[in-house]
Image 1 (tube, one colour):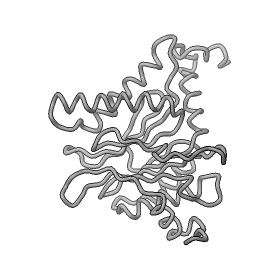
Image 2 (tube, one colour):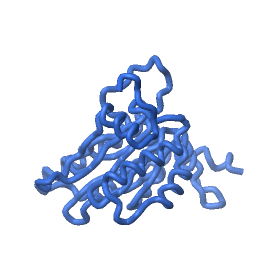
Image 3 (spheres, helix red, strand yellow):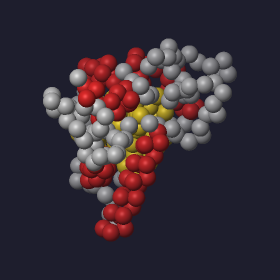
Image 4 (cartoon, helix red, strand yellow):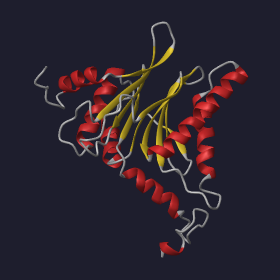
Length: 249
């Protein structure tokens, strides 16, 4: 039945479904997973890097985490070329707002403007939906720390803890059980790594397969985006018991 209605994004099926948008979400289900957790002191983002071949040169920059502005960052799951276009769009919008109003763009306003772009690609003929989901972590003076998730349909929502990418359903159920309202930043990092260790296909976690980033406030009150170095991440994984210590250590 679906074959009659899935050739274009602009055609609804009799059940009221847009199959091309659903297929885009399926593509994200095959991508490396990403987890975001909101705590009192900041937002933690953890992403799984898919290592497809041992011959690949490992990137020195982050593959799953991107800084959009000083107060907003995101984790990505899906087609990276699609993500790059949207991230560049978001960066330009954030800078235009700052230039016009001399203050950082509110986080939800930035997320909504990007989701409006994504929605347009599901409504007009000849276009394909963006095959990417985002977890946005940010801070603004109105609502403090915030975590948003958006998908290819252009929908977005605020979350306390969220997972996108491969095995996101099982990750979401673990988060639902173990998340506490008053969780600290350290506990949020531990929970995110614990969830990834249980849902990733790999038996042991290493810094080659993971990225960890945090959005937090400095003691002086400035918001900062901080990416965990591979060495610090390895030490953290050994401490939590989700990996084996390397012989050099």
